[in-house]
Structure formats: C-alpha cells, structure tokens
Length: 427
Ligand SMILES: [Zn+2]
Image (cartoon, rainbow, N blue to C red; front, side, top):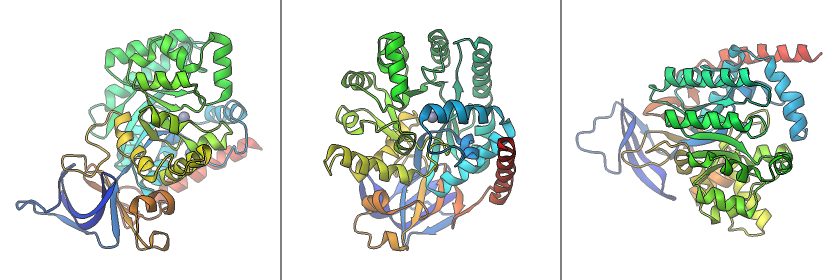
C-alpha cells in the first residue's frame, strides 16, 4: 500500500520539520515533495500531529506481562529467585503467548514498533509479534551448566529450531541469549558462543545488573562480570548487554573498546533497588546506549516514554549537571541507537530508504501545548497516550488508537483467566 502522510511536523535528525512522508510497501520512499509518479492509496492528514520514528524497546521479556504487579517492593534476589522463577514454573506456552500479546498491545499503544525479547517458550514471541504486526528480535533465554546440562541443551535446541522456523520472516530477527553469568556455567557460555559463530548471530545478555552479581563474580573469578566475559571471549561477538548498572571505569573502557551496546532499563533498576547505570560515563566514552523497559514484572510498564523521561532526569540529578543527558540524547537512544544495537539496518529514522516504522502522535492535548520544542515535549511532557497511529513495515497496525489486526478484548479475557490461576495457586 502507498501511504502519504501529509504536511506533518516530523522529528528528523533531532530537528522538527513539517513535511510530506511517502511510504511505498515497507519503505519510506521520500520525505519532502511527493514524487510525481507517487499515487497514494491512503492519505493521513498531519494537522495537530507529530511524526516520529517508531520507538525501539531494546530489552524486555514480553511474556512476563502476566506477572504485572504480582511481586513488588522486593529486593532483586527475592523478587527473581523466590517469586518470579517459581511463578514461571507454573506458566505454559499458551499463557506466555497471551502475555506476549498483551505486551505487544501496550507497546504499540505507546509508540513502540520494534522490541528485543528474551523469552522462554519457543514460538510465543514470534507468533504474537506477527499477529500484531510488530518487528521483533527474538532471543531465547539460555541458561545451563551448573548442574543443568540436559536443560541447557534443550534450550539451545529450542533456540535453533525457532531460528530455522522464523528467520525468513521479514519482521523477525534473532540473537542468541546466554541469560547471565549467574545462570550459565563457563562451558555453557562457550557452547553458545560456538553456535553464535556458526549461525552468525549476535548476543544478548544481562550484565552487571545487581551488586550481588558483581560481588559473586569477584569472589568466584577474581574479576568483574565484564572482565570475566572478556576473558572467555564473549565480546568478540557483537553484543547487546542489558542493564550494566555496576561498572568500573575499566569495565566502561572494555565495553567501549569492544563496541558493546548497552540497553539501559532505568525504571526496572530503580524498582528492584539495583541502582543507576552510569549512562553519562558510557555516553562520554562513545558506547552505543539504547533503552529497554525490561519486563512488566519489574517495571511495571512497557511504555518507552517513561524510560526516556527517567533517563534524562536521573542523570541530570546524579551528575548535578542539567545538560548531562539531553532530550535529544534519549530520543536517539530510543530510536536509531536501538536499531544499531539490534543490528537492524535502515531503521529508527524518518528518512528516504529507511523502513516505514512511524509513530504518529496527536498533539491536540493539554500536555502537548504549546509545541515550543517537540523533542522536549516527547521526553518531558508526553506519556505515550498521545500515540494515535502506528505504521510498522509500511502497514497501519493502529489507527485512532484502535489496533487493526488484534481483538484487544480477547487478549484481556485470556489474561484475566491466567491471572486468576496465579491468585488461586497463591491461596
Ligand atoms: Zn531482562
């Protein structure tokens, strides 16, 4: 379908220009005067609207939306090992699928077009993303070794199966995800690295998320988690590391030198009492920083507008420098830096030749008046509910806040059913 978005203020290269955006099939054909031979099938009026590249959520666990608000105000280890992991044991693939669907709806409705998902049930994430028309990088969370050899092999086999089954889908890409150093033995990580080499896939890992993780690693290996992974060759592969809250100066040097991308998840880190990632220092060293929400079990929202807002504010507060991380910086984190971290080319900008992933916001609402500075409005004033229309891969997946391919009520019905199961198990 050819879509013309007519005379719309658009965020391009950190500036806002009112322009025409012509979409042909899955690609932005032109920005500016429409080509003479361009015949639109659909015209979207840009009046009182703002076009931005659809946001990129670089770290989440979509199935975990079924755990929203179920285990809060708990320290990280108690939250993960005593509450979340036992709950995960009660989930089946169908529960996980509906959790993914709920997450996709929430993400689309708050302007996200692409997400990087670490999951535990094969097929659930790709099926939900395809049903909703979202772009996704699928990463099966791999854990093993440490006495769980058979489980570790099974998870690797599931990752390969899923990769072979969905890799031809244009909206679906893959990474391999050794979950973390505390759930994977050294030999197990090495076997994942061999597979990454064989399949030419990048890596996704949780890294230096809690002080406990760092202290344990120092005690066991005499090295920080970053130094430890460096020593076993993990960073020889393209890597996206989530969290990176507790880093030494040397760690930051290593991440910068090895070209590791960092997915910051400020709200999750705050809520679990893990701390604040040194974003300003990473930024100063040239590390590619992107943004993730983490899961709805730890955030408890998948709305990237919240992450943009927190990221900008937190680092001004921490560094006592109001210019430390700007609105322009965080918007880049949530768009083109995310695309770079996920290895998705021609994504994250409104530019001819780029993928047609565009979020259109309604600016005719009190928090968006007066529109003195759209980037500031996106970072400091918007809450995501302004997102009115979503185009992903050239297809309108939401219009006037109504999803075009999904029955939202059906999803909520299933989520309620699953949640009742948890409540009755708790009693
Ligand atoms: Zn995570």
